[in-house]
Image (cartoon, rainbow over all chains, first blue to last red; front, side, top):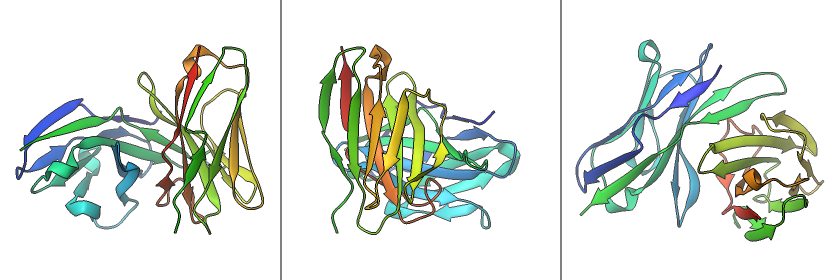
Length: 115
Length: 114
């Protein structure tokens, strides 16, 4: 069965520090992987996605994620966090079945940024 | 270009009633998807419509249904409401590929079932 695990419920970082949010997935085939961000003023927004090809994916707002098949991971990174990055982050895996494509989300990681 | 709009934004219903939520996608977007977000179950995919047809469906009971009109606007209906249906219901639209595409989300409808 497909599943996504985000082991960190809450992470606090200082502004300007680097960030890594962890995501592990379970899926039998090559997965479609996504990172979404949800903030009160902006709603839910796609940061980046991985379907195939280069395992290092660049997204919006300076985020990147690396797909590691051997570790079933798709961790999100940012070299320098800004106060506006405070939000909840969701990793998701897309499961492909004819007529029954599905998106499975992790439970989310809440990011707090300290000035 | 206007974003995804959802109406109403807030709704209070009684257990056993039914409810209809509405979603207007971004102009030109033909795919509309619905999601449920709760503190306990998190974000879950409900279903996706494209060209007035349900193209994909998540793991929800038949009480949850939807439809899409020729102008791509979509409605979601929940019959025989249960307390556990209290949630934020999000709608998203995309050009054509659907839930694996870049989706644009609306602000959501917060449904409270008492």
